[in-house]
Length: 220
Image 1 (cartoon, rainbow, N blue to C red):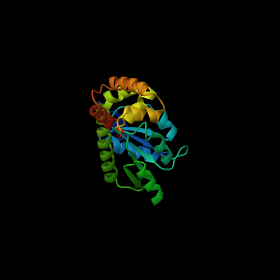
Image 2: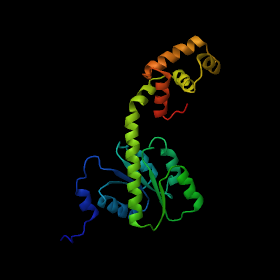
Image 3: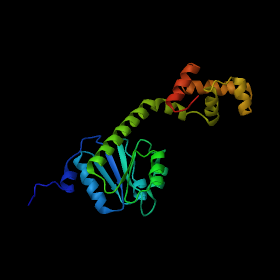
Image 4: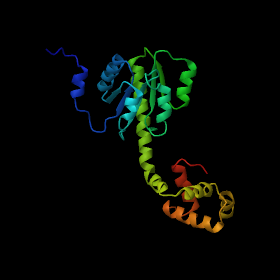
């Protein structure tokens, strides 16, 4: 007999639209995971639930807008350590921390490392939903920026180590003679590396190279 109240199973059976944002949850408390799953499904997002940090790390990443709801206290790897591990390779996945025993130094550390929110249990559903909405918007913007800079990053990946060193110095405005002295190589060698680097980066001028470097997050 159906009571008319939607359950997690009912919501799971509803097909989410392609590209729906994913909300990852890492919490060793099954009751928390289940309640968050219901909230996430009700909001129209796709939940992915994990009981430990290692389970989450083993899960393949999806190139979709997403965020991570992360408990600070976990059985294998605590939330702050997990945050440290994924900051670089999952930078497009903002983190919302939840905890039952927060302290100010812990929350400051998490926020300084890039967390978008630090919530202490019990927290209001509306507060969490607002945090998730904000995090997913940030993720969507970051993914869009990544897609826009992909051609530049693909070009950069073709550079040799020495060509990258030359590029780093060129965008600071150094002349070939100065670069040669900095790297301990001849000016002729610098000129050769510089020429190859400019061709690979598809930059027709120094100004264009500086602009490309800016898109890659490299300062001059």
